[in-house]
Image (tube, rainbow, N blue to C red; front, side, top):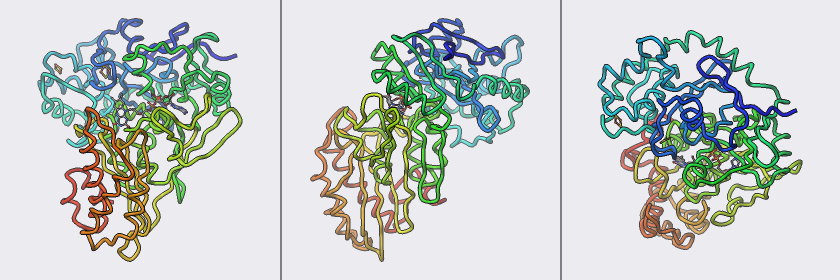
Length: 493
Ligand SMILES: Cc1cc2nc3c(=O)[nH]c(=O)nc-3n(C[C@H](O)[C@H](O)[C@H](O)COP(=O)(O)OP(=O)(O)OC[C@H]3O[C@@H](n4cnc5c(N)ncnc54)[C@H](O)[C@@H]3O)c2cc1C
Ligand code: FES
Ligand code: FES
C-alpha cells in the first residue's frame, strides 16, 4: 500500500500531513498551518530569500543543511527531511543562536524583514564545516536581498560566526537527528502517494516505479527541484492537481565520474552535480556559481534545466558544446539522444507525454580540446542570462581543427552554431586578424531574439565577441585581459 502521509522532522518531532493540496508550498505550510510566522514571504519567486529555511538531509550518514526558498518548495518535497526555520533557533531561552548573536553585534538588521532569511542562510553556512572567507560569504548570501541595512555588516557577521566549527543544539544532537532521518527515509517499497486519483502528490522511491507512474498519468506534472514549477503555482496561480516528484529516487541523484564522461541523474541538484561538473572544466564551475543562488542550486536540477526547454537556461548550451547525450524512459522503453536534438522549437522538446528524463551523460573534453563558456547577464549574481556562449575547440599545431559552439539566448532554443563552427575550423591561433571574420558567420546561424533583457543587435555583437574572446584565451593571451571574474578558477586549473 502506498503511504498517503508526508512526514518530516520539525523541532525534534515528526510532523505528519495528509490531505493537503498537491501544490501546497512549504511556506504556506509554515505560515498558514503551523502559524510559524518568522519565515517571511517577499517575492514568492525564489529571488529575495526572505523565505529561506534550512532543509537537513542525510548524506553519507551525516545531516547536511542546505538553504532553500520555502516559497517555491512544495510541501511534499521535504518528505523525509528536517526543516529548520528562524523561529526554531532560540526557542525558549533568551540565548540567541551564534548566527543571530553575530548579526546583533554587527548591527546587521534594520526593518528586519529580510533577517530570518539571512539567519537561515547563515545557519546553513555555519553548519557547512568551512571557515568562510568573504568570497564564500558573498556566494552564500547572493540569494538574500536586504533593502535597508547594506550588506557589509551582514557579511561581517557571517565572517565572525561561520568559522567551520558548529557549536549549537543542532550539532549536539546530530547523531540523534541522523538516526531519526534514517528512520524516516523509508526503503525502495516506500511509495509516497498522498491524495486520490484526481489530485495527488506522488513520490516513488525507484526509477521503475517513477517510470510506471509517469506513464500511467501522462498529464501529471513531473517535479524535480520546483525552481520553475514553484513559480507556476505562486505566479501563474496554476492549479496543479497531479504531481509526480522525482527527488526520492536515489539512483536519479547519482553523479558518476567515469574516466571519459560524467553521468548525472536527472534528479541530482546543482549542488550535488557541481564537483563533477567543475572537474570537467573550471568554466563550467564558474557558470554554476552564477546560476541562481545557493538556495536555487540546493533545489534546482540540471534535469529540470534541460526539460523546461528554456532558450536561456544556462546549462544546455554548455552541455551541448561538450557533446552531452540524454537518456529518456517511457514506461519500460528507454532511448538516448544527443542533447542538441532534444530542443525542437520554442516550448517544444522531443519528449512524449509520460516520458521521464533519467540521465545526462557528459563526455570529458579530450587532451587536445579546449573549453570555454561565458554567461552574460545584467547582474553578476542570481540573474538569468541575456546570452551564454560555450566553445569546445580541438587544436592541433596551433590550428583549430574542430569546433563545437553553442549559444543560449540567441534563438528560440539553446542551439549549435554550425556555420560558425565551420568558419572556426582551420583558424590559426597566431593569426587573430582572421578571427572576427569567422565570428561574423554567426549571422548565418542566428536571428537573435529581441526582448527586455537584450536587443537582437546587442546579442549578436556579444556572441561574436565571445567567440573571439575564447580564441584569445585559448591562444594563451593573459586571462586578465579577457575577464574580470573567474580568473582564479581558470588559473588554478
Ligand atoms: C530565483 C531563480 C533564479 C534562477 N536562475 C537561473 C539561472 O541563473 N540560470 C538558469 O538556467 N535557470 C535559472 N533559474 C531557473 C531554474 O532554476 C532552472 O531552470 C532549474 O534548473 C530548474 O530545475 P528544477 O529541478 O527546479 O525543475 P522543476 O521546476 O522541478 O521542473 C522544470 C521543468 O522540467 C520538468 N521536469 C523536471 N524533471 C523532469 C524529468 N526528470 N523528466 C522530465 N521532465 C522533468 C518539469 O515538469 C518542468 O516542466 C532560476 C530560477 C529561480 C527561481
Ligand atoms: S519570498 Fe522571495 S525568495 Fe521566497
Ligand atoms: S533589514 Fe530591512 S530589508 Fe533587510
